[in-house]
Length: 495
Image (tube, rainbow, N blue to C red; front, side, top):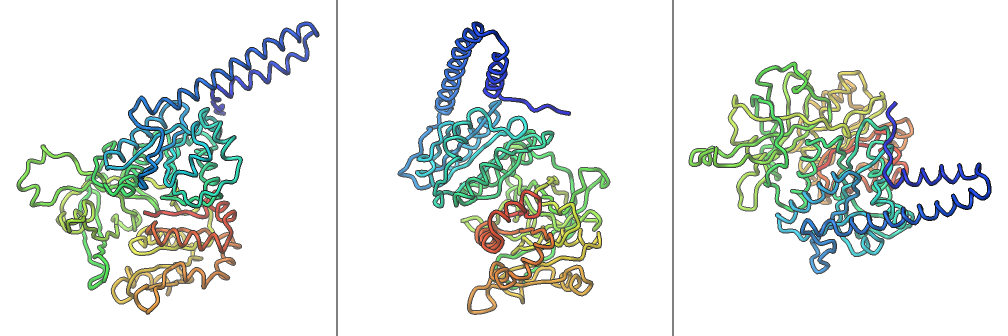
């Protein structure tokens, strides 16, 4: 059995408690002397804790970042960290540098300095939180948990995100970060994006955090903090799925391993992510020396197939920069890379969007290219003979944007999909989205959830995922939805 590691303050508290108990077995004169010593030790402990807190307050100044937000700048972001070994603080400084380089106004503070008034004056905050031992908060989070989290505060104005640092060897993985996440949501704060869990400094998870920092700042072309260990794959298929669409062109992309297809590097589960290493457009390569240019940052896509399909498939929509040129990743996959060409790809495990281990009913909700992640789950359910599945899918027009129409129809015919609710927002005068279908089907959704159903959501964070989450919260209750999330019965892959 692995014993939990206690923080130094917890060790002192435990030692004082044991000494107090032991003192009762001493003669009365010795008890008096012992009590005097305990008072001195307690005072020393208080002084050490105060010095530690003061050190936390000064730490960020040594890195050149203010601990106070520029209140005149509405785009200011506060970065708060809870660190036991210093790793969370390092990531906080790295995060701050990334956002500052993107032109944002940044403040960095230890969680020890965050008070209720700090949260009241802040509109956006990024938490980088370690968990120590079996679910304990780091030392510099003690005051926050005691003075802030024990109170109800109206944080309906606040948007937040959490990077959770932990170790899966411990049963209470990232437990402190999860407690903060639940507390914030109960104070009506809004998620910028879902919590990202980092197991033992996993570089893939940290790149995922950096991916969201790029979206938050609007600067998505900064170099990766760590270079992914790509494998070679061959681009074999590219099919336009929505000709004539009012939206951007969406393509089914397929590729196969260049070699060693049976190795673990080329295997995945439904819910996992493909990290793509894009290249420059051919015209850029023709006029520049590749050695003189840095590698482009990775791009992430939900995998829409299974290894049993014999190929890795993606559903990629073309994106455009402000100047009209194609985006780094979507341009590479949908236009620049040639069929038969080798591309760089790495599979990243995405535990938080894997299919629930138990055989239970499954409700799948998504929009746009979010169908990719849901498609892989439906394929996995069909392969295992798990036929209690319900799909909600939304796009613009049925005539042009019904991705994988024939496949979904076949799943309905053979019983893989018991129910399908489609919402094409532009096919009627009033906009109709998946959250509207959820409201209309609330009686049946409640029945499915009572039967132990899991809910998977995949697609755009802004708009769809937020509205779906609010609709489900209203329908099931926030406590029920949180309990489902704890049990792995409510999972999201949103971007």
